[in-house]
Length: 269
Image (cartoon, rainbow, N blue to C red; front, top):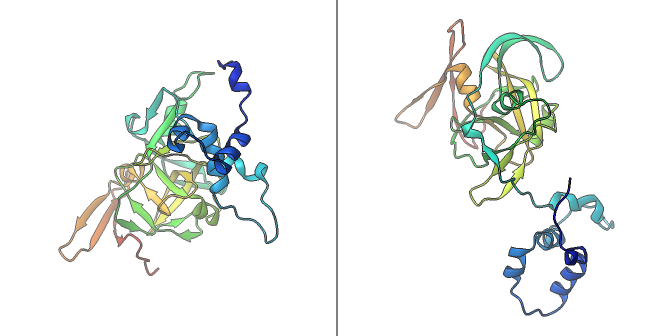
């Protein structure tokens, strides 16, 4: 692959230039300079961001610098809301931890899109809103390990969790299946990957969901439309502020009702 580059660009020394910016008076506004130079933005961000190091140890730039690289979207991307809704089926499937389980398995819009690509066709970047404004949560048992506060957000096309909770629950994820999350201020973050067939136990109902792993979201776990689509969720609100959610198991139409909790309020399990 080739790209166009001017000879003068090969002469640029980002580190030297940043040194001059920091140590000398310059006749250009820093805002103007930063708005036009991605390498300088990355170098400045790296230099002013605190790094976790052992006492007495000097940080090594080669170890940490990669995390400050600025993400950019291609000109041709896909909004996740434009992808078809997920499908589900009951089958025996290998769970994320490697066990065979007969359960309702919910698909994922990203996986469905990737399966439609022709051989050697390059996948487009998929963009999803990073922020969630959901205020209610439930506490399913994740991967048989831990009850996790899970926000109910029917406006999201995906199920996602934080890296911290994924690791505590022992999830294994595919780092090659990623999405790009865009916050309200247009900042970008790339997900860490997709954990397949993760068991969620709610009451005595077990479902297998595809879960996107995100480094540090503003929540522990988010249950989006794939969860709603499978269990036909019905929410009932009360005058005193309480809220319950009724889940219906496909095929059998068996129902259970689960209390919800205000976001950030730990349930007594």
